[in-house]
Length: 316
Image (cartoon, rainbow, N blue to C red):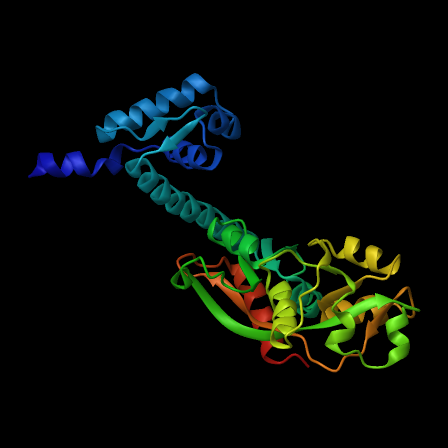
């Protein structure tokens, strides 16, 4: 029995370098890319893989025309390797936070509406409580942010759990509902007609988010429910800067989250953009404050999490 246990439980002989390598191979799709990412030579990386395969008595990679692919055993090891490496990383961060007081780096991901709505107030709150915390905010789609969160590149996110991911991997606190407004250039002919009907917009040029994003789906749903053809003249982009520049220089219409639209049109006084009154609402989806369920927050991240949660519960 002891010999069988030794064969199926080789964890006592695993090394951190091997765990980092197997995870890097899964990310890069080749031994050479993994070696470069870890700043080791390719022969050294190949030797580590050989040692791992000898430990388990089975291949962990299979060669492809270009690069390699992990075997089911290799993929399972990579998954557990990530868990171990993330736990070690969190341990290092927590010890540093505890030894230095309220210091540390905290990364938050957010879709555009919550980013504009909650993060400026959060930054002020955190600055008052712990001025040494370095707070970084990444604005992107929920799909990108959720994968960054699971990969340990974010501490939390203000977004939505994508449909293709296991909701059980996340803890979510409802934080708000994102609404959108239509924005166009000042002097646009539509502004002279009063509140716009959806039929007035069917043939317009649009600047909007890519297919599959919640805002794009909400916009398309409006047209479908009104039995109108969805917009066909579309520039799709996630860039707020490109969106606003395109709208300001032509006759295109853009759908932006309410907070972004209000800031772009009113926040700095009269400018090139204006909000278009409409006869219909444009409601996107509820969003949540989300963290990875199996990964504890560091003290600094916990402080930021609680600040966001308090602001979401009492937006003032």
